[in-house]
Image (cartoon, rainbow, N blue to C red; front, top):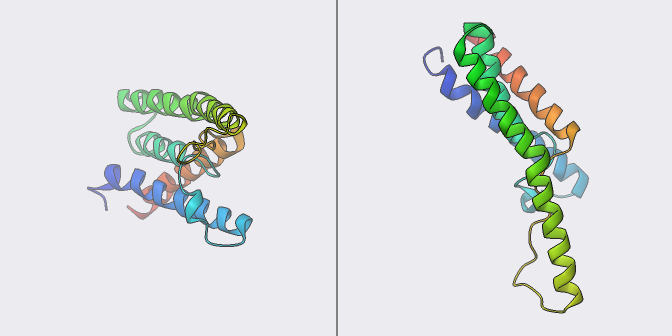
Length: 140
């Protein structure tokens, strides 16, 4: 795992966050929640992925290294996108869906409304990513 840690860690964080999200959504829905897979939900996959690689670089190389700064900047961009831009896209989808219902001009399928993340979902993603990186460091 030592040689592949930088490639495996974000994948592992995505797998852990996605599996956790599926279980949480399934418990809430009372059935397997395959239809709820996608953007949004707890924990944030995007936040987990970028946090895992930034944390791994910080743990292994140190926070004073240029690679950590680049990873941290990327993490901020992705997290800001997840918390603001994509949430606005979801709000636009809600408004469009309402307008289409009011005009009885039904779309072939309603637009997906759940796009962005809450602060709690993002925080859970960050914790998942950092924990994944810590686990990888411990195992390698």
